[in-house]
Length: 403
Image 1 (tube, rainbow, N blue to C red):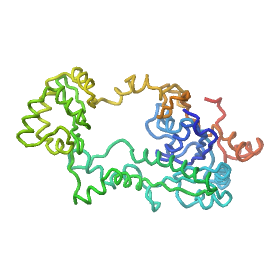
Image 2 (image 1 turned 180 degrees about the vertical axis):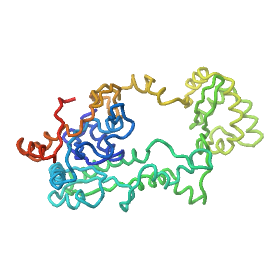
Image 3 (image 1 turned 135 degrees about the horizontal axis):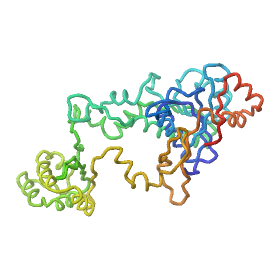
């Protein structure tokens, strides 16, 4: 946690991954992010993974450091309260539909400088999820060895969209500071996905080649990179991105003469050309397989580290979280009291600011934990009026002591 965004308040009405991620990143940099949900929780409130008590560890971590207001959004008075909070605050992040009671045009009638960032599926308003957008841009047909498509388990487009939405929010606020102009920024998953494909050269590549690139399994396109198995059964990934790494890899494995013989037979040099090493991978891989399978992993790792060669063994996520460098000894993690009651390392900001003290991660709120505080501060509602709204079931409030 850092204080770079102290003084910035954001209302968030969202669910699932992309939109909550935008709010999370702002909160981790010090913004006050108020998530507004239906009383009892929105559609992602119990999303797996869950504890035996059915508390969502997913929700608990995507909503760290935020405040929570619970409203009955099925009733007009609850919707009007949310609209009032958005107008009073001036910054709004959501993945609610373009039209309806949270449309920017409706919200901006009484707050023309309102900044709204809206995460969407498709740009035309059609629904989409990470796992369907990924299919649409073609990556499952490039993943694995084929012939069937292979979906990856990481919701990459959700996460990229959330980060881009947080960036877009700050960009729009910057413009408002210079011009006084508010406005809505729409960030569709589909545009983030196909735009990223284009940024990586993928659109140009397939139009230039007239076809898709080959499916490579665990090999890295355009480089010498693949998984290999050591004598003691460790599968490790090795990737070469510089001439020095290539030279050091050849030396570490004692393959100087073998590689020189291949170069002489082919009339070329692998020393400084990534493309040549990739083009002739089917010739090179067996040579490296034979050298690596004759060495134990610890021995190879020491030699690779000494040579600045990029490598990593494959391991399970359970093994990864036991790694002190990743978790226990990593300063992005700290302890926090969690609504689920389960104690585990909590992640804060991924960025490190050496010149500033890092504050410990803050917990996620309970549903409605801050309803009374926020309604009083933002809408100047009296305690009696808030009590009436709670009694009427329009406002939900969790009155447990602060976590």
